[in-house]
Image 1 (cartoon, helix red, strand yellow):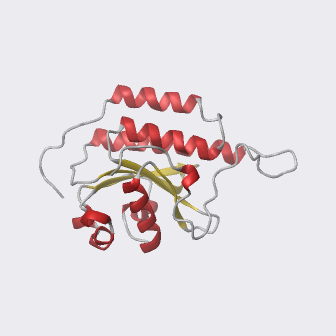
Image 2: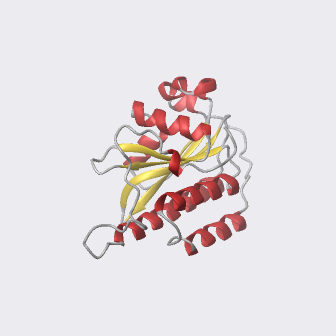
Length: 204
C-alpha cells in the first residue's frame, strides 16, 4: 500500500446532505430503482470511478447485484467468481475494509481484472440488525491512499442500502408474501450482474 499522506477528496457536508436526501426517498420506487439511485449518488459524491454492491443471497452466497460503471461490474463479478477480494473479506466483521492497491493486497483478484487491476477499493459492510449481509464497494482505478473521512463516507452510503433493505424486508403483502413494489432484491444464481440494477456513472 502507498504510504504517502492521504488527500481527502470528499466533502463531509455533501455526504451528509446526499445521505439524508436518499433516506427520505427510501420508499420511492421499486428496489432496483432505489439501489440504482443510491449507487449513482455514491459514485458522484464519493468522487470515485465506480461503485458496486455485493449481497448474500438466500443460500448465503455472495452475489454481485449492482454496479455504477464498468470497473464495479468487473470487480464485483470477479469477486463473486473467485470468492476472493475486499468484499469477501469484509463479510467477516462490522468494519469497513480498505485496500490502497489490490495488486499488493489481493494479487489473485488483481491479475483477473482488466488493466492489471492496480485499483484501490473500500468495502463497507451492509449491516441489518447486526448481521453483515454484503457490502458497498467504492473503487478507484489507480492506487490511492484512502483517508478516514473517505472510508466513513463510503460506510454512510452502505448504511443507506441497509436501511433500504430493512424496509423492503419488513414490507409484506396482504397474502403473506413480499410486496412487488418494496421486496428486497434477491440475487439470482449465476447472475453476476443484473443490468436492471445498473446506474449510469463514470467509466472506470
